[in-house]
Length: 207
Image (cartoon, rainbow, N blue to C red; front, side, top):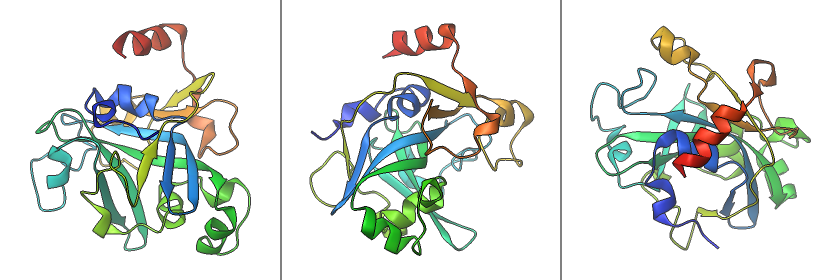
């Protein structure tokens, strides 16, 4: 069952956490999302922080659409637009676990095996055969890249986001990276910590 558009039309931190365990499907490839990062409208690390540009326009909505951008001229990074239209926010998919289509994923990733296949956003983009032409594609609709309901994790890790040294200190330190506890398919684990009971209660109350 595909995720509804309303799933994405919520607070970005709520969606980033809720995406853990959900599935991405593109042709024969099925991936379970194991790690995400949230980027909000008032966040200095967000591409739309300084307003609408040709690249960031998709972040202004509607929610549930892909935002794929090219990083360092090599890596295709999959983000999913969140919140009501005009809020300019998205969730970056940082890591996944393969559920189906492993041979094709390995082929697209140069024959690699194990967690190194998918522990990094550029690796996820390569495994799903994405490029910037997918920007604007609705993940809640049938056909092409789809987001499907998966199994929620039993426990969650949190920590600062990766590769945002240009952001303001408070934004660099914000624990807006989320990962499935106990999963091997998580990147840069050393900077993650278990989610506290208070954080879990707050997240559940926001659902």
